[in-house]
Length: 121
Image (cartoon, rainbow, N blue to C red; front, top):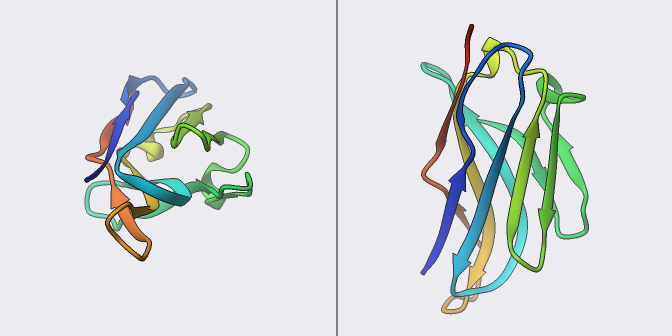
């Protein structure tokens, strides 16, 4: 079994900062890309940022310059530092990891349970 657990969401005022954390655990044979997605009410889930094993990062245009993704390959953890938060950043944030479990011969996507981020004055 593989699990992703997130933490760090909450309520913050516009212009504030939050840091999200995600850890993958369980029977992990190999892991590739880890990332963060978000889903606002009435909208589709969208990529926020992801990071590959080599450290290559990818960001949505809407968060470039404000959000920073980082990770620890050895620990299968990923962080999302979110600065200059705006009301439009309000959403449930989900961690996703592409993992090959010990019992599988292929990679598949695993998702966390989501953490709420609310930006409001």
